Length: 72
Image (cartoon, rainbow, N blue to C red; front, side):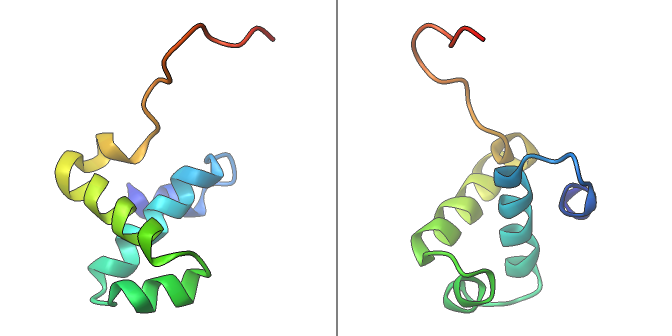
């Protein structure tokens, strides 16, 4: 599923990035290495990894934001 999200052109960028983070960590790379390879902050890697460990695939997508939804 994660690899599919990374490859699919219509995947939201944030979902693709979180998928890359999880896949890189699963390959045994350290947080610092994943951060360097993807060009992102170490805290972003920690957050993405933690979301996946705590909630699995459901943790990969954004949660609804509070408040009234935007009007188109």
